[in-house]
Length: 373
Image 1 (cartoon, rainbow, N blue to C red):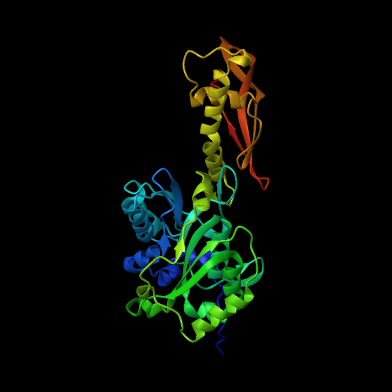
Image 2 (cartoon, rainbow, N blue to C red):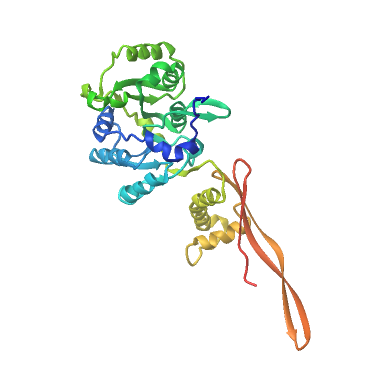
């Protein structure tokens, strides 16, 4: 007798070809309609905003967003993430250099994103998330539910999220629609135009609240509108519905770390490299302060010079997401020489500098520099 069971989706499965069955990029005409919902009048030419698509496929929609903003004199930094290697490679070839994408190939659900001041990083987020079930700490949860919440965690206050998902998910999943209204103000839900509605998708757009608050009645009101299909389509809206608040633009900071939360030698090295320029700048500033009694160097300190300072322990402490500790280890080099039939053994003390980098979850990576024997 054959048994049938529901397969839990996890991100390992999403990395395989099974994920390709669920790859349905949004038509660019729909992306344009979504962007038309936003009034960018409070953004001036001196501002720069962080935009992202963290399940970005081949990057076409994110590239369109960036071009859309550029045509309206809005400067943006585009952040791209995709879990599948094939689509990541395509995006890198198409938009990596051309659009100046900041790119990452990562499991979204363990990814770490932060600025130099906090973990809120993105001004405008748009996403068409993966659908299905996944295991989260022993619980069977919807991927799109987690995707929405995690995006909200990474968004600056008053920032705007555009979230696409099948209409039935909002109707059947009361918790999800309540989470949306708990976190976002000025929420609007619009159906895709009929010619693009084959996947029964809707667009949710809203502005992140400075302080979260329950709005269960309003969430239920919108859910009933969806049940009865008493909502507008994107094509029926001819003016912006939501304004990007100037406070969201002011909150946008450059992203210092944009990496997978899984700690490895590579991620720790990337984390170390991400703060290296800050160390360099700080060391130059210290040299420029005459009240410290330091002489101005003949040349600017280069990364090599700063690395010596790091090895010496000058920068010990918590920097960014990693704990830095420098030092030296005393080792011995043994040299064996022959003088006729006699062997002469010489021991030479050798000092090898090292940098120890510790992540926030306790994983340690050591970079050593061994001197020549």
